[in-house]
Image (cartoon, rainbow over all chains, first blue to last red; front, side, top):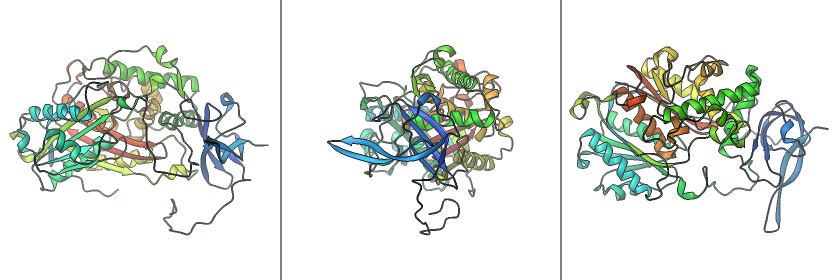
Length: 94
Length: 391
């Protein structure tokens, strides 16, 4: 359901893997589990619209700021009993 | 928002509240018994006179049996509710509507939570099974998202904002120090708060509410006969609730400096109660200060401060216990503690004491209208409750 107009089942898949985005707001979560603590968690806003919540990687946790340019990268989130779970994180844009 | 409201149709005629904190020697059932019987005594009613019950608990039990078995309620309706951290307020709201509808005359709203037994310092939530790709932020992390967004939008230096947040915690600790039922009954210097160990973003341990055990209860009755049970009932002026579509998680229009759900529920409550200038008309408020940035943003969402100005009002002492518009005079979630299902009723308990002149060393001078605000979820995706009550 569209959060703006309420239209039901009229969504289309959009590819964001190569879409540039920026930090909308962020935090360092010292309590949450991560392979790479502390978790640098952010909401990211894509160019052209759309928002996603994910972990940042390849960043200096002390230097993150609202508005930083990012790009998506497919990374390992968790490993349990030898099984790796990969999903999207964001890293500084090149 | 469309709601008809039930202004002045329901009265609170008795309340009870256990001390909040660590109750290692008690189970949730013991806490329910303590709060319920204090409320019965407060209203001067025999348990047999209460017609129906609403029980709020997020995760300390299930079904109405949790209460009927604990209190040995003989074959009466008991509804169990859950609405995240606003669970206790939902018990009040639904119980009030039952009385206003005429279905029952005398009812109890009660809430309980036992958090300490989990062994974790914080909330442990069990999400439905998922594919493991959901972003997992802890509660303090989600609320800490407000701080950099607020600083950026209003041009507040982050060092100064840290002082503002510390002052909110300092104020709530100062209020809690005067409250014999609070979990943390000690004043804490601002510097200690500001330099406490980091939890998430700008938040240190002292920016977070108390993880605690506790229960609280209210007995409600039709207003026209309220004086039958109480020489000093308090009257429900407004009850509002808003669950959001989580727009902030999907849309760039949301900037993490407000809770649209709070704005909606506060405006609805003001309309029901006939309040046009909350900054002037609301004598005091108990608000959902789960983390210090939450209280800051709430002051603007509820219209206590103009947009971008709450941080100045905080520094000026506007919301202090002896300020012009006290907020969290009982210590709030920060200092009184936050046993989820009980918190909404604990907020109302402070209104009950203050409006009746029974708040002892933290008594506010001649309060007229009091407000409770209870929130569940996170910035961008939450539920919000607002009540307004008066003597």
